[in-house]
Image (cartoon, rainbow, N blue to C red; front, side):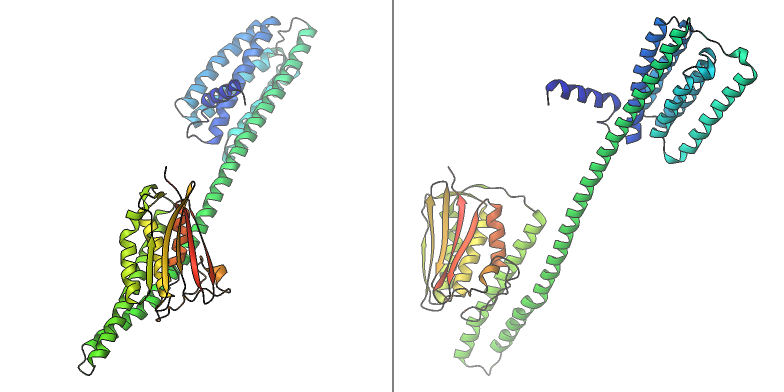
Length: 438
């Protein structure tokens, strides 16, 4: 689209108030005022050419009145006042034109038609019967006066030729203005229809979002009521046993270890739930920054190293000190912590876990590998979905099935990708790809 067309369209929208917050019928009325102004201006020039000076003077007066009406509508925003001023001044003008321009044999009836179309297009439904009655009544009164007092009707045409040209010119003006009014009305209608369609699409999207949130909320309550209530009940049971005098020292130590494991995994559940809730509230708003991977993951890796050592698992970390990625610190910590926690959970005593990072051109890869029990083929398609039922670890560790869902969501929010490969009985390897910082 050329710059000239854009400027012309912008100017036109400004003239009729399309860029302002006004109703569609107001914009159409402003358009009609402009069309009528141009049409009457052309008619004045035409009548002057036909020596119809009296009629041209009347039209010039109505032209000034039309400008005042447009001012009240466009600038003062008094639409109803402008509408009635337009209607009754129009009736007055057409009545005068009727007597000075050959009555029923002149072009005035065609002008009444365009007047009627204009008012019908821009009025609310409650005013439509009123305008029908007004037009029929006014034309009937004028016709009755002409019939009973024919000497009141004048002809200002200097010849039959000028009468012929005036009738045809008026007909052309009526057709053109009717076309422009219909075109403007249809355009406004389509714009409003598109706006409604867009609003409906937004509403549908919000409804789907609300349905999803409601579903996740129900799931969250289910998790809280079931998966968290169970370990908390077990913690209370262990505490009661520890306070009992009937337990041996060895049994108490085992109970303490079980209590530690249980509280650790319960804490992980709560941590994942809190991060999930936060991600749902914040939507997709993230602030990605250049992050030194070794510094960002040092605490997470050390904590998981201690946990794996207590379980008798060999833990190896290989994160280059100079490797910098584009990521969110909280997100990458949560992802690696979940992957390492799962690796520890599903790797038996005597096994090994290896977390490693390497730079590959514009992307960096973080891998978490173990030689644990692996993942069944039937479970692989659901690994990163909420449909995956949580498994039980090698020492009966329990989860809630939310960790890997969070991992996928948070990796993708950082512009990365996550994948895995696993073989039953031989272990699992998760691979995270992130953009490398320059």
